[in-house]
Amino acid sequence: MSEVYYLDSHCHLFSEEFQEDFDEVIERSRKKGVVFLNIMCTEEEEAYRAMDFSETDRDHISVSYGIFPTDAEDAEKRWGELEKIAEDPRCTCIGEIGLDYYWEKDPAMHDLQKEVFARQIELARKLNKPFCVHSRDAIQDTYDLMKAHHWKGLMHSFSGSAEMGREFVKLGYYLSLGGPVTFKNARHAANVAREMDVNFLLTETDSPYMAPVPVRGKRNEPSYIPHIVKKIAELRQMKEEILAAVLVENWRRFRSLQ
Ligand code: NI
Image 1 (tube, rainbow, N blue to C red):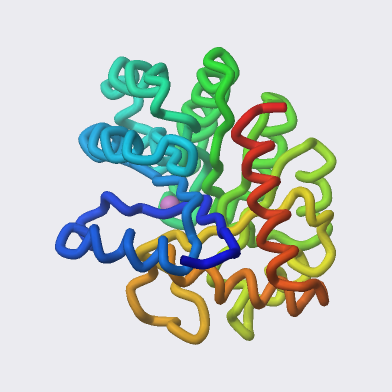
Image 2 (cartoon, rainbow, N blue to C red):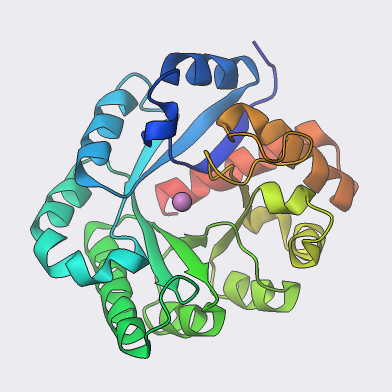
């Protein structure tokens, strides 16, 4: 067992890509010390399975559930079930919620996405739980909305500039970095890793997507987190173990809503 503990703030472990070898994936991540897992769920049934699994290790495993931006048109139909899951004490975070103008080009749908995003932030506030944000090709609208509906949240796979990153941090939001920080062409992610206040950084895999170098292109899994931490530590000229401990501390603070 590793002496250093790591955080994966965003992994879709109950997606079908992990159905075959779920136990092995968990075992590999434990061996690497990646014990803090935030399991993201985009469907109701997934959320229930993840919440049951979280009971095996409530101190380390969190579950997030929310209506994904491109599913905004189903929000009305799914709202009752969302509230029920969100109120469950085993669901610790609302997400991933947000705006996605990359997959959705219709401006009328962007308005609906904003409405559903805002409504879910307000639900998080009501339940005193943090939220996790997905934002793609919509960073300014995301920022404006998170400023207007200010609450405790994190930006998953933050891909904005360091300048934009600082604006989110000023509002108390956390920035989570994943595989792209290890990619040569992801200039923004490297700058964010290097320049942000370290107390507002988190790490994630976004498993099964976005595997970091040197396993880029493979199915991603939490056991690859050390590659990401190593890269951020290099960029910041910090010791990897110290950075890993800071990231875990950030996550505890984020989760406890202090
Ligand atoms: Ni995700």
